[in-house]
Picture 1: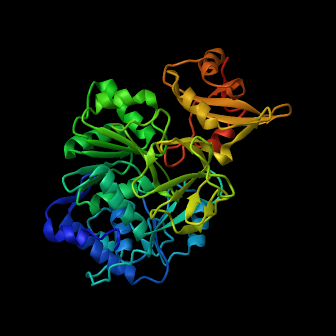
Picture 2: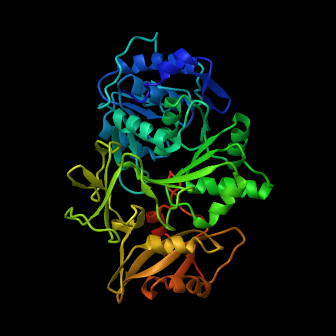
Picture 3: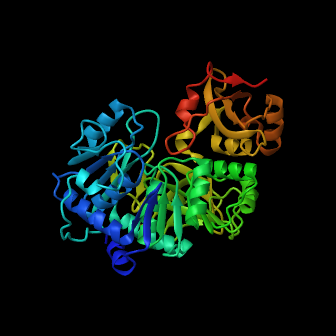
Length: 487
């Protein structure tokens, strides 16, 4: 079965129900199924290889992604924000059978503003043709991890890895045809692409937007009666700030699904107040592993934990040799599930470890006696200072709970005596101020002394990756001349 397994069924039984909306353009299930079928026939007849989609965010990208999957081809979703040389490098490595782009060098060139009207004709599609249902083991998607240096890792997924996720997701969240799913991020980010495919598989109405603008997202939620909201923490925080500042609430949302980073504990009360009807759930995952754990507001999740194993996932903590460690011991997080990726299309990862069917991407953590996972950090981010190992994520989480701090990055800079000296880079909240002494007093009661940074630097323009996470390599390059030491 393919990720588009539900489209024809929905078209046959609910043809006039809204399926996909993006900023003024809307398709019913009958219209979406017909358009996807025409484009799928075009892609199925393309030369061997994947279908590379190098397109702006929007409804056309969504439909062509679905069409590639329906046509039994691999949709290779490129990021149009990449520099030209990087895009050329990635395209050479993935060797697509067909490149669809707004640039001049594509096999199929679309106008920059291409919408849904005339899309089939623009890609050269004729009439729909009967196509076999793609096998679940067939690759349908190559996504790319965001980063600031090197070739992005392209991870490959099979239909089954997502359809199994859809089924597990139903057990966890109960998304169905009555829902309106708002996925307001870029489809180059797998969270929002998954939200699109997941919603359509459930027969829901999926609402997208070309770019994330907090006020526009709030208006979309109100206009379409959104009941499920996907978001990363930075986006959700901006939405809450807007609602708070304007004295408004979003009371139609029943479920908020958050991923990409840990949701700050200090913001949970605000979310409950400003989205009063919403259940909140955050999940920890990885591009290679998909869902790993889930933490639901209604469950008794220990403070600081990323939750319990997601439905269908087996978790274990092991050492690098693959030996299982008991509850309470810190080690590598290993995952066994039907959701994992099938391999890399580009790049590689020195952090990826396999022991039998269990995979690890290098995250360190520990399980308690009840099966709740607490992450310690990434093995590759470990800092050695004064002869001791330190995972900076613990320090960052505490700094981000300070009222003046919006975001933190704790990095090691070379030090001849200590090996590495800790520097805390901070993005301060608008109008807020902090001093080194104040931040040190904040941390000392909560951390051993060797984990408390001696220097703090303010960063005016906080570097983010395309997926909205802190860009740590870019932050490191700001030291020492492009940041301001706090007094």
